[in-house]
Length: 152
Image 1 (tube, helix red, strand yellow):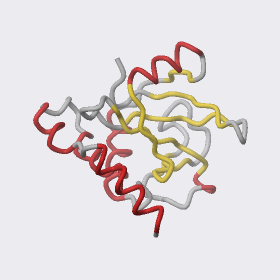
Image 2: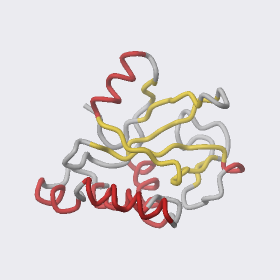
Image 3: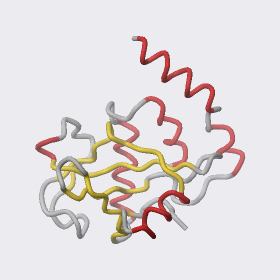
């Protein structure tokens, strides 16, 4: 089972560098969860959430959460990628570490508008089904948003 706080190492193909990805939300009605990655703070223009060495065992330098690069995935896809060796599970995020990332997602201007509804799914315990249904947009709405953004 994948849940908020699960951490994975994912190889960035272009740079050959592994990045730490953290699941920061519970699943929506489509079983999608929001993930963000940490990167070198000197290469990230978003300072909404910074970490120093020791905040997580993988962090070896000042790091920032790259909210603009947030991705959505399902538990099924993450399990498949882990089984294939494509991604590697790392140490579970401590509650304070996870909360800091979630709080940063609430204030960051880098998080794509399409993902803002996940903010309501960033809770310590799984949210009630009624809330999940209420906050999850219909996919047709998301497609319209993407198309309208592409025209501007």
